[in-house]
Image (cartoon, rainbow, N blue to C red; front, side, top):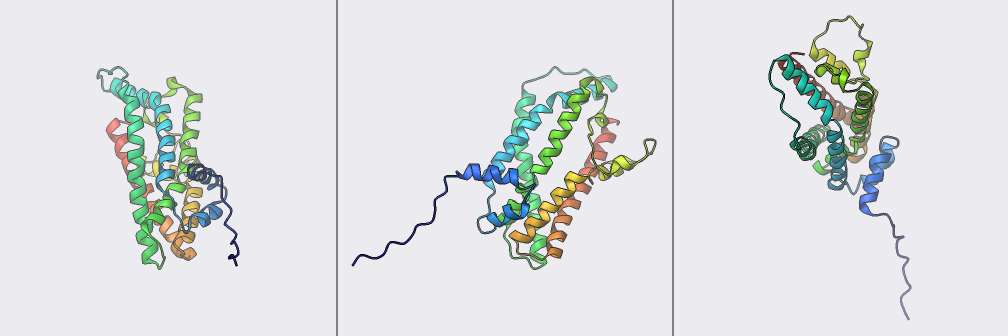
Length: 244
């Protein structure tokens, strides 16, 4: 007698690339559902490739504004302004995935070390998956900055400070407040998009590392503060070197 046929699991018509792209779109709105899908099969390299393309596009879009800042600084220093070069586009496209990979590698290490030390059951790959799926909020912030700068126009840029588009706590400062660059960058990094990115990271660590809320939030907050302090320091140093 023939053995009874077993029902085969339903096959999905969704390609892996499309699935990863959809998760990147969905994660700002339903992070819990996305990370539960990734809990047993973390994904990094394909989402990273998709995010690298987005970062490269944003980098190319920002070339005219970055060049205008460079021109303003050189003019202030009475130095000749070099002509525009196609290498600017090449650098933007090539540099975006490298910078993104470095940031992901460092953030993944921070999340892994903190979550593991607090009792989480995780792997480095899972934490890399958490990091890359929190990036859509950063891209949203960069896109918003590009839109605002485009509305202002290149003629409105006279120095590095004119490139700053903030939705952070620095907006609460009085217009005549005299604060240092570090504090201004630090407060600027505490805004709704950054906080929501922090929430997504905490949710991701909690699910992917099977960690408690305290451990998940600690890991995500340590990573957030690390980058906030580092970028604030680098921003302040860059502003002083550029003469404001």
